Amino acid sequence: MGLDFSVLGGFWGLLLQGTLWTVAITVLAGVLSYIGGVLFAVVALYAPAVIRWPFRLFEALFMGTPLLLQLFLIYFGLIQIGIDLPAFVAGVIGLGLHFAVYNSELIQAAILAVDKGQTEAARTIGLSRWQALRHVVIPQAVRAVIPPIGNNMIALLKDSALVSVIGVAELTLSAQQAISRTFRPFEFYLAAAVLYYIVNLGMEAVQRRIERRIAASR
Amino acid sequence: MDFELIRTVFPFFLKAAWVTVLLSVLTAILGLICGSLGAAARLSRSRVLRFLGAAYVSVFRGTPALIQLFLLYFGGPQIGIQLDAFQAGVIGLGVNAGAYMTETIRGAIIAVDRGQTEAARTIGMSRWQAMRHVILPQAMRLMIRPLGVNINALIKATALVAPISVVELTYTAQRYIGSTYRPFEMFLLAGILYLIIILSVGRVVGWLDRKARIA
Image 1 (tube, rainbow over the protein chains, first blue to last red):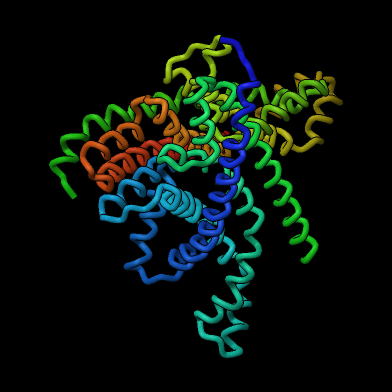
Image 2 (image 1 turned 135 degrees about the horizontal axis):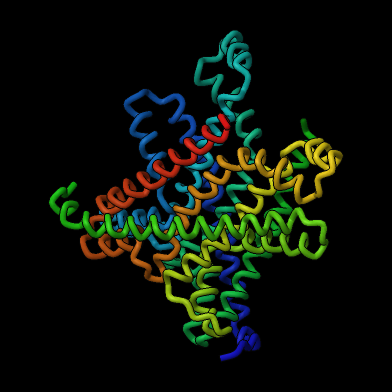
């Protein structure tokens, strides 16, 4: 069976729709992972030991296991405790949590890197410990960490293909739907790869722009 | 927590963990080979080779590993490549890991001071001799830890062969989640085995790194 790329013709709509869903999942999970990363970082650094240690264990478990396994846990685990989420929501939560743990590592390092004098100055002018953290330290840490988080977001785009396995209709699943009708895996997976690559190039361009702007504002 | 159930399924998880280890080792070996070739191409004097090296890195890092794997396994037969799921897993994941390793190896080589090459060339070494006797021994030390990070990622990426039905840890966990309705226990079991594998590899990498620093 040779290759015949004309079979793609009738399915561009489906593939483009899948691409849009992939972008939507990446953006939603990306925002979730950023907010989650800040929260996790604060918990990992400042929560009382009773919360901090179990949390560190959760972090180790999430950083040391494959995303696919975590997606199965979240999708089937939530069903088991009676929460039947649509696959799309479970996928966004799974991706978001996974990358929140990675972002948290970056944000923790950034928080610790903010000069101690900043906290001392804030405390001197009468801010509480929490206020100093909230208004002085975190805003600086969150900015410092944007470039490495950009790399995580590009990784997130590629890992979003995994949510096809729990049935989220994004680009990979769209390609599979087309394949089940045409029996042409090579053509459609290649087309999907090209579409992912284009979105990836777009994200890299956006990342470079943001990094330039940050560099200029310093 | 149902310990009786965990005891019953544990042998199956152990067997699956062994498949994950085997997959990881073979993938890492292929990744290192592809990474070395990729780095050599990217640092070559030939413009064509440099372009091919850069294209390899860009394409394989710019698209999902899952898609690359599906393209090879399901699409391969259309262009005359017949592989079983395990072989496709090793080749697909190995070539993918090689793209990341290319950048790690190249980074370590260009981190060695340029003056070293110039000095070696001045005392009459050829370009290749300078690379072989002066640059690589130093670059080797620099690349151990970052390659360890690549291998850590690669071990987790072996889970991607679960959708093409290779019976490794994630596939086994998924199967038992489906048949026992005990997602947390199965996740914990597979998770601990993954952690053991990853921490052991971390130990080996740390040991190699210390040895290289003493030498």
